[in-house]
Image (tube, rainbow, N blue to C red; front, side, top):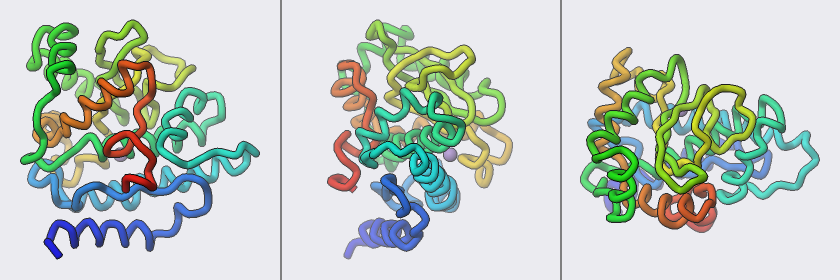
Length: 252
Ligand code: MN
């Protein structure tokens, strides 16, 4: 067995052994790469804690939140994406944990080991140029949104209702699919998100959020982000957070 396959197997066993996510429809999806696969840009210890502790807590919290609702809900990736629109209306736990599960599941699959990171597809590259002037201007604007988000939250690239690309940021575990956030943000279907909570970077980057944002560009899975854009967001569909956009169980 190759080393990286062994590490993915270990990561899967950690998830299976964790158990806290099995009391409901939603489960913690395994990472499609080893915990240390994004080094040196994002370190293995941060990835391990972020996935097995932080993300697992959101999954457990979401299962708790939907338990009392009486609704029969499928826990697959498509259902999770659709859940976002009404999460705020379903209460604080659904908002925080529903957003937390979706945002992280999308984040993991939008990252990739640096040697496989690739480039935006021609269609996405053209849309970026049209919206921001150039790829480097897009990176500048995205980094600004990520840097200036006060406290904890996320920066996003996404497709507005008019079909154009835009950048926004949201607080805590909110995301721009959610209706009724109660503060200024750009409503959009996100295709790329960056977690700017301190738990995402503090072990390696300490208080230097801008250095983490700069490192992030090395590990963006552009073929996945391009698929998010072309197959889902451009068609008005929220992006299912799996490697190809299908169901969790089938893909992971
Ligand atoms: Mn996080």
